[in-house]
Structures are given as structure tokens and as C-alpha cells.
Image (tube, rainbow, N blue to C red; front, side):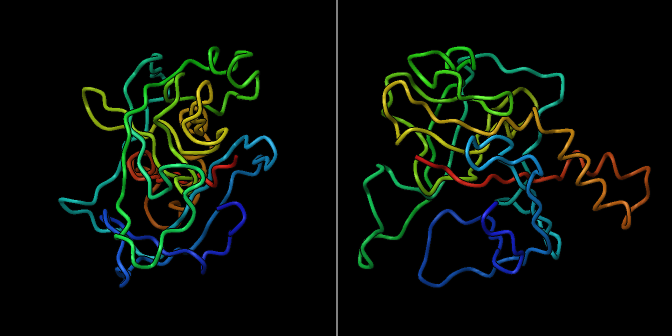
Length: 225
């Protein structure tokens, strides 16, 4: 997203789990806004918001993820799920035109503490407060190239929560190099600020804060090697 900020270059499709030669109709994007502190070298503040030109209609197969309450902390080992359209191995390359159609994939990846992920045997201090780790120390299961911007979701007693966004890593599913995700909870103030500014001209101030907390949809940028 950070490298392709023109709204005209984006189209949003929802409720799709299988690719096809004939693309489903999508919703045009009115505006893309990246975090002003995004750093392309460190991948810090790796988040952006998209404003749709028309509202997205929810259905049995299309809905919104909830955001974490600002006071809620998830413990290491919490089971979460990552999904995406990316490769299943880093050297996979582009699929052959006659191969089977791509499918949306998912994987179970437990949260790993930032302290452990920043240890010398993993990422040696590269993670900032705006990042979190999920995966397995032994590798084998991870997000990969093409999954960038995908959601990391965890379920509590009330709802599925958007906890992270696929951001970067070292290769894919390598030992001691779990996936690194944007830590959405650390960026909630920015998300709320942007969504409220967008909505002030459309709805009353009384409703703005409630609506923004329910319907903001953060998107990430890329995953690098």
C-alpha cells in the first residue's frame, strides 16, 4: 500500500475465497492514507487505511472484524489465525496459467512474546512496540510472500479481533524466524483519529466515535525478506 498510494489503482473485493479468471466486481477506493511515521527500512508503523467510495454491504459471508479494546492484552501462546493468497514456500514463483485456481489459505499461529522474539536467537532487537510475533520457533508454518496486509485474528469470548497485519519476516517458516505483524492495538489512537476525521462531515458528533470504533478497517503494506 505504501508504494501504491493512488486510490484509482485499488479495488476491494469481499467474500472471495477462490480466485478466478473472471474477476468479481469490486468496490472502488476513494482514498488511501498511510501512517505518517511509516519507515520503509525498519517497517515500523506499517499500516494504512482505505476509504471506500461506496459502503460495503454485509451478508452471511461478508462482515467486519472487531478491534481489540485498548486495555486488553493477549498472552503469549494465544492461538490466532493468519490468512492470505500468498505462496506456500518462498521459492514458489508465479503459478502456471494451467494450474488450479488459487484459494484463500489460513494457518494457526500462536502469539510469541516480543521479549522472546527480540532475543539474540530470533530477531535480535529489530521489533518495535508497533510489531508483534506469531508462529512457531521451529518454523514450518507461517505467512509468506503475497500474504502482506493479511489479517492476524484471535477469538475471545465476544468476537474475532484483528490483532495483527502481515508485515515482514526472514524468508517463510524458517526456524527461529516467526512472522512479524503490525501490532494493531498500538496504533488504535491513529486509526480512531483518521476514521473520525473522515466521518465528521457525514454524521453527527454523537455517533462518530461509536461508528468509527466498529467499522474502521486497517490494512498493511508489504512483507519483505
